[in-house]
Length: 287
Image (tube, rainbow, N blue to C red; front, side, top):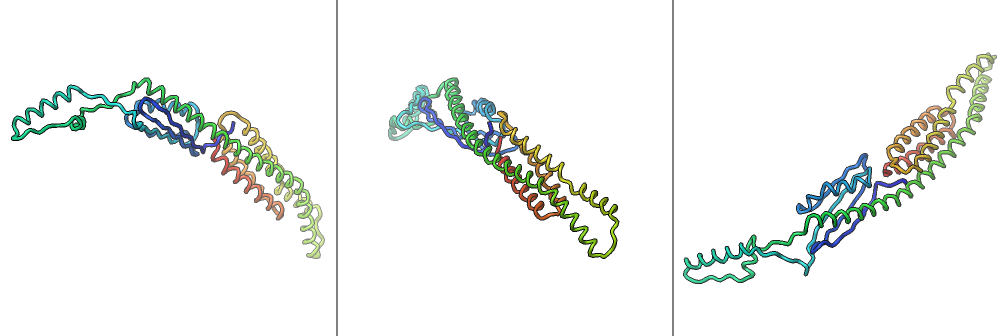
């Protein structure tokens, strides 16, 4: 299945009093490059997150952002009783040395650093919840990549058909090009009012025909296009192979243009280059 490397997916899950969200962004890249941003308290799951993503995606630059928010109204705290007792005892000692009594309210005590402690989720439970969130988000990302991949495949196939049509046109046009070349040479000799050496003329025409022969280039173009169409039906990632085939197609199209001595053949060569470049641009986004 052809997959695009450009996609986006986002999900969130509720774990205890936390709302955890995950965003995945994917763009084209030569290899698999995973960048993960997450809070320090979740740093222990980074390796697992990376493994979950790489197990489903083989190519592209992946940005994974994981954020944690406390849910209002559901936040609980643990109070360090020892810290509270120590704080009250210290306050009494200070008050004994002061001229007037200074009292603290319960809120003052709770606001003192170290007294309040947030309840911590069990790491095992947190890991399982995050793994489920990441797996769901990666699945959505993959589905989006596959959906866009189907569109890319249709675009590439459409242009491959046009390339095949141009190849067929060039193949049919070649005999006319050689006939036109023969006529130009004989007309030029006739203008010189000299008796030509017809044996030598035939030799030159054979030499030019060989020099301008594009049969091999057309055959290779056709072979490469058929290979592109075959690769598009593969299930594994094929982006790099398609990129290589684009280079080969472009090389043959350039050779075709260099051998052209006819404006129609030159136009065919230009059209081939345009189509190949359009395919190459699409292939850059294929996994």
